[in-house]
Length: 189
Image (cartoon, rainbow, N blue to C red; front, top):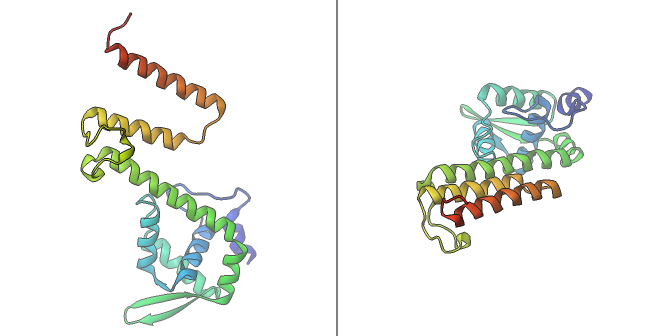
C-alpha cells in the first residue's frame, strides 16, 4: 500500500481546496463504504451533503477512485442492473482503521465547511432563515438590513473563534467602537 499512502499524505498532511488528493478521496470513500455499501452516485451526493455543497466530486473523479479500490482489493463491486454497488473488503476495513484519525479529521473538516456554508446561506438568504431563535435577544423576526448585519457579525465571530488573546483584544476594540457609534446615534463629538 506504499503508493496509496504516498498519494494520500505526501508529507504535508490533509490537503483540500475544492479537490482532494487522490489517496485522500479513496480513503474517504472507503470510510463511507465501511458505513454501508453504496453506489457511486450516492457517494457523490453524500460528499456534497456533508460539505454543504462545497465539495461535489464529479463522476469522472468518483468512478476511477472506485475502480482503483476494486482493482486493489479494497472494495468489491456487485452489479445491480445498470448500477454497481460497492462494498468495502476486509483489507479495506484494515486500511480505514489504520488511517482512522486522518479520515475523521477529513470528514470533520468537510462537515465543518458544510455547517459554515449553511450558516452563510442563511445570512444572505433571509427566506431560508426561518423564525429567529430565542438567543436573538428580543429582536424577533428582524429581516431588515440591521438584522442581516447582526447575523453577519455573529457569523464572523463564529468563524474566527477560537481566537488568541491578541485577536480577542482586536475584536473587542472593534465591537466597542461599533457600540459607541450606535449609542451616539450617528453624531460625532
